Image 1 (spheres, rainbow, N blue to C red):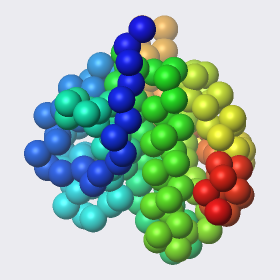
Image 2: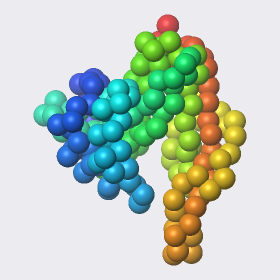
Image 3: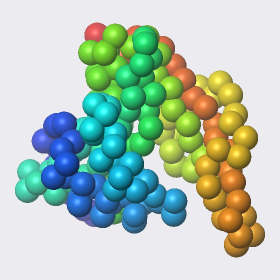
Image 4: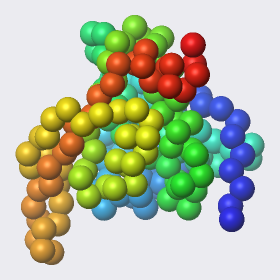
Amino acid sequence: MIQVARTGLREMRMSDLDAVMDIEVRAYEFAWSRGNFADSLAAGYVAQVLCDESGDMQGYYVALAGVEEMHLLNITVEPRLQGQGIGLQLLDGVVLSATLHGAALLWLEVRPSNQRALRLYEGYGLHPVARRRAYYPALVDGKPGREDAIVMSCPVETLRRRRGMD
């Protein structure tokens, strides 16, 4: 088993994008592009990385702070380290960032086929609130197609209480 050393979250920098892309393309069949990350950083989106003591990246997230809400756009854990609590630590970072930005609600979309993420989000306290039809690119019977998204949300204060952040 791989040992996970947590040293805390820090702001994502442009210099992190090589490591971010290394994880992103291994984690997702339809990965974000380097340009998606660079544009998010340039636009001032909330973006943080989690690295171990040696500086190896374990995961990251990108979120958009809006008026009284935070929209989680991308959250990714190094594939070799999934299932070891890193996703929870990243979500805690999202909730703390949402609090700092005055967000009352946290929103995200997830593929129905991503059962691991759905279990993580539901266990964390997020609830399905809507479905976006044909939201994600996907392969359907080996051909380019689209997959729905499940929209999930929860009040930030509820998540803070569930996680003992008060």
